[in-house]
Image (cartoon, rainbow over all chains, first blue to last red; front, top):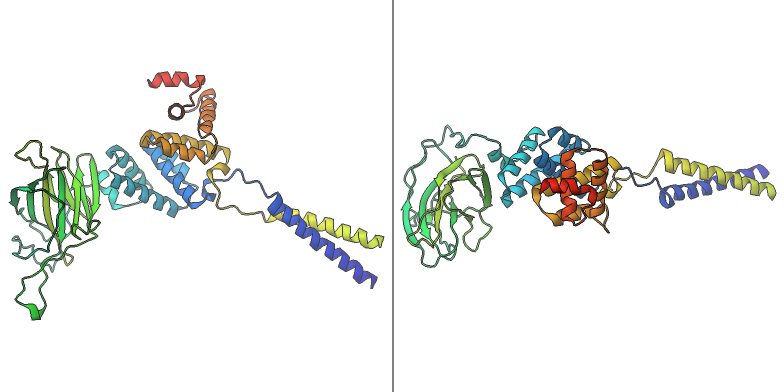
Length: 293
Length: 122
């Protein structure tokens, strides 16, 4: 009985001591929270570290240093943060020099987002390859009824000219249907409407002309020497679900691309001149996007 | 009775020793959600340099101040000043010093030691 009691007392003491020791070591005086490394930081701080490393690279151009700074961090963190930074900066229209540096860094690290294409000197005008079974693009816009649109308030717009651009010789999913120069009373804009190809009406409504549908969610790129901007159709559905616009600066040659910034559907576009010098000219462009090509 | 107390005491001491060994050495608390303030000194310094370099690109003083507040919420400029002075004394990388001095000045915390760099940038 004595031995059993001794054992129980000793065990009880060890258990109690162990509990006290662990409480002290883990809760009261844990291993001091200093000397940590970037990879142990909370996700938002890790992303901030990556952003800072990328921006520092944009400032000093030291690739080795940037790689050293990013080395402790998980690859997927670097990819996510860098892509988010480049896309946010592209959307904000940050200086081209900064965008070029960030894009170069991303390229060196094997990170990719379409937003960086335009800053990496990729060749312009590389339309998507034609589908071997798809017919050539119809050069003549179909006489169809466009969907009703309530474009931005343009107090009595003066339409300077409407043209149908020359079609490309190869089948492309993108086609400029009309290009209209207008004079608004506010700012110089490029207003883009993206429509689908004419849809055949149901059989029981054969008398109805083919209708086009406005396409939302289409990414548009406006590029110019040393810069780029991006817009997505459908963010202002009260104007039109397929509508997006860009601000134009006078005498700057612009190129409009769809989906990717390096395949212009329209280039050499400058803000039109209005009869009244004080009135800024705008372009209203209707583009057809055919998903079947 | 005395024997029992002695055994309990021995058991307690052994348990505490074992608990500390486990808690401090063998199975330490794993920290995964730390903040910049817990970074090792060399990483802290790098963080501050990066904040200053990023300020050169972004020109966003509010963002720089917020980032530095992660290190010293009461006086965000202090880490910049400390590091700038350390790098000046140690003949650190000139571009880092210039970025730090620039930011310190914008934060209204330039010191006499920074004067040569400030004059150089004006």
